[in-house]
Image (cartoon, rainbow, N blue to C red; front, side, top):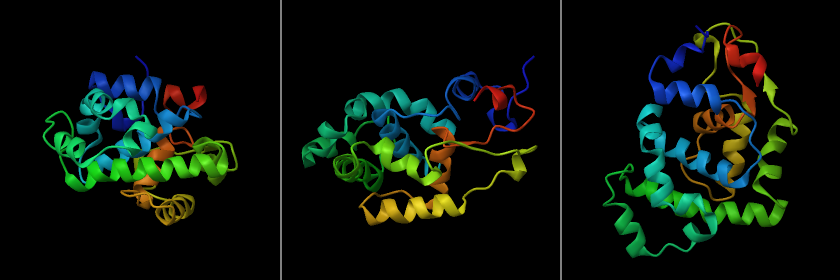
Length: 186
């Protein structure tokens, strides 16, 4: 039996996410946009709640196409707020639209969101050497800087803890514990 990070437990959805995606460096703008919004949607909730609704989010938000989302009118937002497949929080739904607009401005300025976001870790993942879940921080100086800069650029639901979770999810940091089989693989 493979040794995994303690947080993923035995839930098949969590195990698949842990084994195949979490901590793998991502440089795909659409995926980065998806993850930054899903992490924001998670605020105050469990990640499993969001993971279970992920496919619904993709359908509801045009597969996280920032161009399409940036053009959502009020009637589309109202329709989203009636969708039981996503978290129907008005601030969080509106944040995705706001974030799409900010995301497109970042792409225009930097050439890609990937180029912008990865500058916070000098273009390569930070490999931590944690033995236990309790050693992993909720935020760092880097996630503080990222949060501050994203907020300055107009992003919403993007506090330092959300930024750090995003960094973990997209492989900007490798926070698999050293005894996890994925630690050396990513």
